[in-house]
Length: 508
Image 1 (cartoon, rainbow, N blue to C red):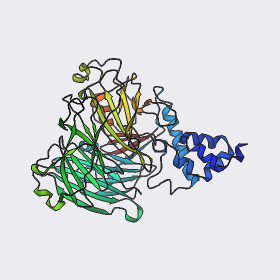
Image 2 (spheres, one colour; image 1 turned 60 degrees about the vertical axis):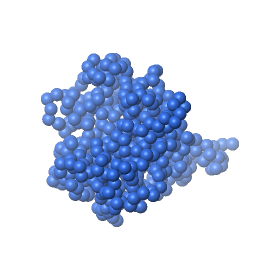
Image 3 (cartoon, rainbow, N blue to C red; image 1 turned 120 degrees about the vertical axis):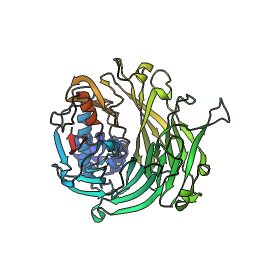
């Protein structure tokens, strides 16, 4: 039987097991397969690695696109993935394009104090500064096509913000937490970014945090929930139901100590599952009681507690102890078991494999020695810290897949990392400085296998000399300050850099 006589149903069954790159290559190799793919979007819609390969423009979904346009985006995404992969532990890539976006016309500036408030989705960029929250839509040639400015009270105190795009990408949900001399407050609002409701702001919540919560470390939002975490407590709110409460998570000790209760004492970060009422807690247990895991699952309880109007009357006696459902485990590839204080665990976020399958990606940086732990800048050994991505499949009993990169060509500096867990970028959250002491780089960002069989390692990127400069006499300090507010999106091959004058995008 010739290929042209193969029934379409059989071709669909065959292509269901292919990656995005496999489907694109097949369409490029044969006119019959090309016509099939261009007239049927199911193969690309069901490709198992589409979440980590296929980039779609803001506001676009697979359901909305024609097969021809979907294929065009897939072909472009594969070309970018292939180009980036060629630089893995090899010759650094030169940027193909550099575009600067000035904030002068908006009469505002980027403030380095708010560097962790940076959010990117395709041509949309959001950030905080002392003037409030800005949402920019960037044009192809350096123009800011339109923008939204939401005034916020940012004078003094500390601030944290988290973002979530709505499913149709027509609105942006924002939770904003500010701390001012014992009067910590939380705000939740929605900003319209689609044409028909552009700039419309709906405020859902503005409430004071419980008085005894202090030193909060993490903020997360996933419609209809938002959560603020300090080292031992969670302030969890369902803003649509206007209810919430304070919870203190604990876990049951293992079989060696039956009945022993351990309260989480050092919560670093919280993620909210995109579909299920479930929290993922990242706890750095420095006591060594649970050295193999610092990741716990906590079911979001049905709110039977206080209406939000009564939450200001909460005392620490009103908090509820909540048992975590389970602790996520994985096999460390470091050769020996390391205590939690000998490794950094940082969440990247959830990515969607299908309507019912979500993957939680977590980055783990292992430490090689106690000397490195306490003296990270002195005499780093030639063999560097391993960098590992652990991917937990929530639809498969949270089974873990572990990938480790070859880190022999890079050095990592504790102050040269960008702690972003940006679910709208499938890219890296950490930057590494290459061992070569060159003024313009290269820098290296980790890339893990994306299903296209391009392997994993470090993408190496040259920074051009025409970067907007940061005043500093020390080259390493200058580079650190440039990269401290940066996001690299592997789906688009774009490096976003912030500067007081505005933003610069390097297309690799």
